Image (cartoon, rainbow, N blue to C red; front, side, top):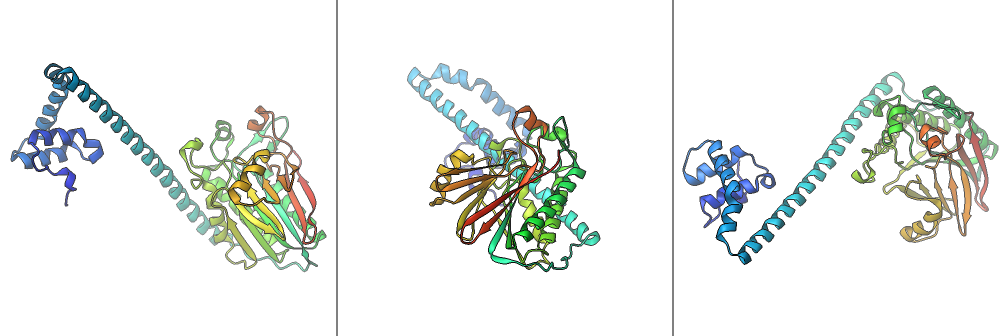
Amino acid sequence: MTLPEFLHKRDGESVDDYHIRLFENKDDYDIDKYTITNLLNEAAGTNYDESKWRKDYSLYIRWKDYILQNSLDQERLALYEESRIEQEKEKIRKQDQKREYQKMLRNSARFENIQIDVRESIFELEKVKPLHPHEKYKIHVNDEKHGLALFSDWHFGSEVDNNHNKYNKEIFDLRVRELVDKIIRHGTTNNISTLHIAQLGDLINGLIHVSARVQANETLVGQIQHASERLAEVINKLASVFPKIVYYNVIGNHARTSPNKSDVGLSENFEYLVPWFLEARLSHLDNVEMIVDKDGYVEANIFDSKMVFVHGNFDQADKAVTRLPQLLGYVPDFIVGGHVHHNYMKEYGKTTTLVNGSLIGLDDYATQGRFGGSPSQKFIVFDENYGMECEYIIKFKN
């Protein structure tokens, strides 16, 4: 194997200088003591074992400062000390860079491993439970009416049993079925022709809070698989009712790959597996369009209304109405999010913020913080001529 040029002895470089350089830069050069031994023996024409070169270098380190302090004048000694400090700083900087790189590799490897597990689970599901299109409903539709279903903060994987709320896998499934039934009821009552579905994040509970880890009753892979499968069944059913489905996927904060948000970027989030799962399970449907966020938000139009879908962890309503237009280059008509576990609507001049409730309701984290609300989701009807026409709050029993 050809060695990099910097590992070879330089022209005019003594064996001793070469010896010191290799050991001082061992980590940066990514070499071990045995590689150094071979390089030095080749340069010196010797056949010493590694302990000789290593011990010689240790002696050099042991006496280096003493010799320099007693052989250099104060001016040269000060220059040497300044140089030594800068070398130490550079060494620390490189160690920090290497540590951050290793952290990035660990997060990436973990994501890839979970992706493999989820892929295997999809193959198994396809064998035992293939999703087939339902028989199409024959409903009267009005091309001037569109519906918008907001899904957010389902937090599947959490188990809650407190004075205000009870939530587990069975209750999750019951609430999802009730949600679908009410979307169909409201959508057919208003004769909508296109159903927009905005999945606004935190579909799974993840592992970012201590309380989330304590309350989790499913593995991370299990959370992704079960929640994504229920969502696939929901879309499959709704696609048999409404002529066209447009699905928007926005990531939340609970599924990021590290509990520490400063450790990861936006793309390092397990919820990006959800649309990938849906595409595999819903490939038989020709009336479903899927749009996935890239930067934590999705832009869309419902008739002439300019929509921006967000999760809400980066976009508090009172700040988003001023900051997002600077990023987007225009003023949106609606900013739609979740995250805070209670529903509300508020107008800020030209922009209306729509905040969705949560499917989970009050968990321990929300109860301890004294915030949150009853479990709910939203369904909104848009008219081509008048914009937002009405809003349904779909509530669930605690």
